[in-house]
Each structure stands twice: as structure tokens, then as C-alpha cells.
Image 1 (cartoon, one colour):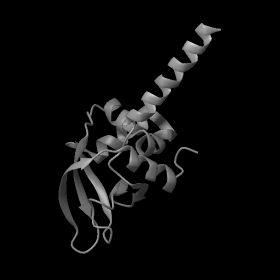
Image 2 (image 1 turned 90 degrees about the horizontal axis):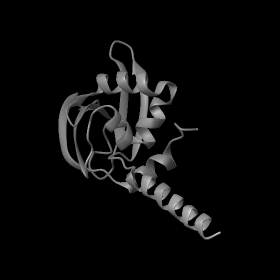
Image 3 (image 1 turned 45 degrees about the horizontal axis):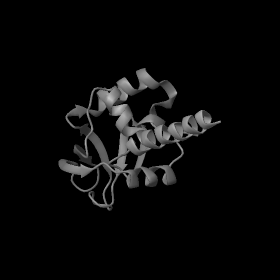
Image 4 (image 1 turned 180 degrees about the vertical axis):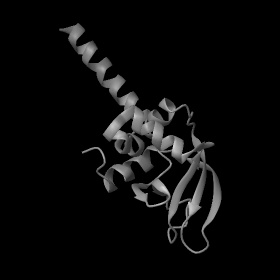
Length: 140
């Protein structure tokens, strides 16, 4: 009985630890396709991006969005959006991009000027993941 209790507690700690590792720099994500441009990943982070503008990923820690999408689709199939939205750190690691406490982003601003900006040292947090999970349903 004692061994079962110890194993149960150990299992709960392992699961809790795995979930605690999962984080994201985004408070919302959306995915789609523009004719002539291809697939895109639209992102939000109300603390770091202008909420009046539309932001699309160009690069995450130096890796281009086209490579990210292509590799994520190849690795995860139809679940690639779920992986990107709710398992960001794990997914980026599988794609060869190490994610630390912060991330450097290159974003395309679609509105008013069509410019590319760099937003560096964006915190990658569990709180952001909570927002993603509340706002989206890519994993259902």
C-alpha cells in the first residue's frame, strides 16, 4: 500500500512538473492561409505588441515561420496547430529551437505600413499559456 501511495505521489509530481514546463510568449494565436503568401501564424501579446495592429510571425529566435510551419506539419500532422498553441516550448524544441525564459521575435505588422519589427526578450510564461487555452480550441 505504501509503495502504491509513493508511486501515485511521484506520478503526480512528474505530471505537474511537465505541465509547469509548458509556456508561451503569446496570449492568443490564430492560423490561416493567404493566397500568394501561404500559411501564416497570427499572434498577440497585449503586454508587448500593439493591440490595435495585426502581428504575424516572421521568425522565432531566428527560425523562419515557413520552416516552422513546414516542420511542425511534418512532425505533428493535423495536430500541428494544437502543438504550436498549447505546447509551444516542446514543439519549438522538437524543431531545433531552444526556448528559454524569453524569446526574440520578428513580426510582420499587417496594419498601417506593412513593416517588420523585432520584439526581443518577450517573456515565455505559463500565464500566457492559460490565456491561449482560454481563448482557443486547437487541441479539441
